[in-house]
Image (cartoon, rainbow, N blue to C red; front, top):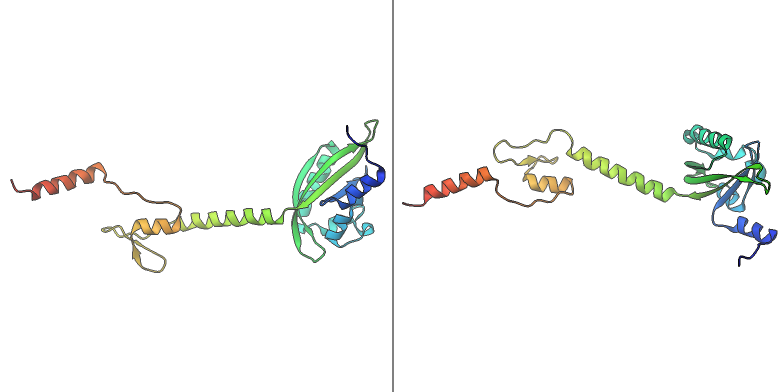
Length: 197
């Protein structure tokens, strides 16, 4: 059996939930932000309502956010987006925002309700991983100076090293050694010529 919550219990849940919560009316302007949102931005409800909250969106993300928001609002469909939002200390943080339409008991569309969480650490970790992969690829891209005779490679410190050592240092590749059929035939022929008959 589920217990019905009172209005004051709902208010406590909304205000003290560990996520930022917003609500937008039919006008598409926001008419509510919970205390967690206001603490994050360091702004008052009066500053955020309507379109005031957009002042905190990073300028490079604003047009994309607006396009996603208006498109889904008009279609009354759930959306998810990430953008940078200015925190109370002036730092921009990556926010994952999920908005969903809400309706009254008769099914009439009333606007959108959304929740946001700070995903900066995940976004930065993904960016660092991508950058590391690109650096690794760049290290293996282009011309590599290799000796025509001994097949050693000249590294970026201008020293000659074995090809296996160079590639192991610049990638995750590991080497095993074997003998190809051509070399095996040559070695066997050479060994055969050394054995007295």
